[in-house]
Image (cartoon, rainbow, N blue to C red; front, side):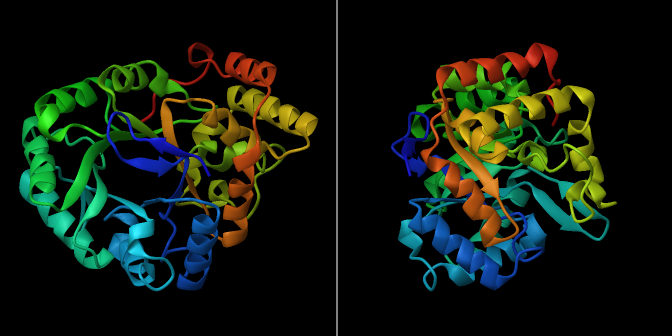
Length: 320
């Protein structure tokens, strides 16, 4: 698997990353171990998680697998902080104290003394960005994190954080939603990242599952869209505009003898500014479907056709 440089840093990561949001919730320890082995065998290195995933249980599961299933030094370990649990549910808190407490908790659960990349998970309207940045700086200077970045922040905050961190620490990465079905980040975030030399990690590269093609005719009973808790996550991508993009992807896939999933990941692969696309799977079999896209190179005419049908000006506004 291709290894790409993360922005202007010296860190290199696999162009596909392994997401773990379902681990310890929908994915048990045996499936997780199989996923991790398959991922590493395919040349993958970037393992993405967050303190909020399964209330920390995702990190705990990863911690139990590092050293037993794969060596810690084989992985580029990325986690996120800034969402803490309360009796009333998750609360966004990117204050200095909350972030550093979250990072220390992540390190305990992951059974490591540092993470390779630490991201602030979401904007906090109640905390000045300058305060958030002090926690990011301290995470690096204290040795807890090798690199830091932001997740789901708009372009102006990306630029402001990069300025505040300056050259001694630097903003290494932004993790944002990006797919052929959701290209809103091309308006502000991608240009900002390009100018600042910040790496881009793309979450939900399969359009929240819609780009697999499974919603083309109906809503499967076991899908996210059929779940009362998750339907709202998928519903924005089930309209007629989305369907036209999905059909274009499916047509391209049929012509190439590949799956819509593989074509969608291959479309992102030609975006050289995207360092890594984060793929998540409930099962090892699902993950292998994503890993199978590694050898697919899209013909330029197909890339151009998909670019035209999914252009942001006729697609969706940015969703946070």
